[in-house]
Length: 151
Image 1: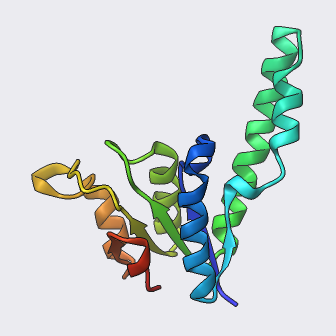
Image 2 (image 1 turned 180 degrees about the horizontal axis):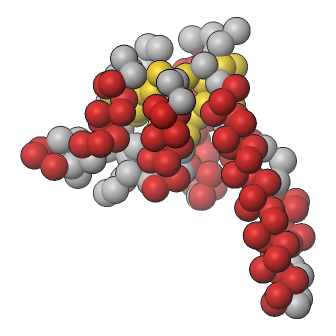
């Protein structure tokens, strides 16, 4: 079974969880195993580090934790066969752009999902031209509806 890395900002709000679950359901129906950074087991450690009373200790604990999260996500991209980035919003999420750029750089096929109908890119493009270039240069595609995802 092939694995897809699902880059998205959708974990920042519980209100977006149904949207994230619809995307994951579509990928599952297509036969993919999904690496979802939001499904990794860092929540408890984040809560614990955030609750440290001493400022310097809290900052150090959070810095160590963010390094661990970054490494886990890097490894998730490396171990995945392809990457699908959720690119909705007035601007492409910087984390998604970074994950997509890294995947492009190591030769992974990249896809995008932008259901947002607003164009935010240069020259009437649906998004930043470099993000769109990375998708197309890998042989990937930009999808405009969840139901159209066919990777």
